[in-house]
Image 1: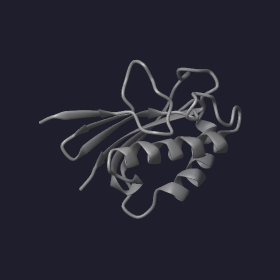
Image 2: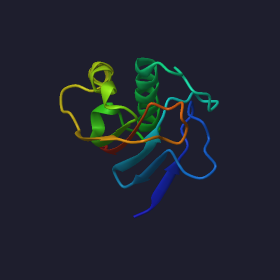
Image 3: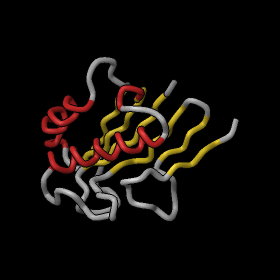
Image 4: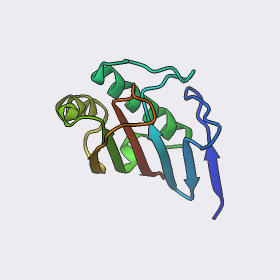
Length: 127
């Protein structure tokens, strides 16, 4: 089965990985952080602003692969502090409803930049 690597419009262009890998009707979405298309941190110190940017980035990645947030079957969420669980739930409910994906929540000591408060990766099945 051929594999397609996709670098979506509106997301920064990483030199070492693809934001989306499509194999058949499955999309593997790389961990999304609160970056704009120029690689700048959005919402430094503001969890809700960062969570909103992360979900917007997930949406862009899924769209580029021919899917939508409703196609997510699994997400893994990495938080830098468990106190962010409640605001995460508030933002998440604006983006995910109905048939919810399987979900894992992990609290980590840090992410790729100390400015990032969360990261979300996903798997979607489209078509």
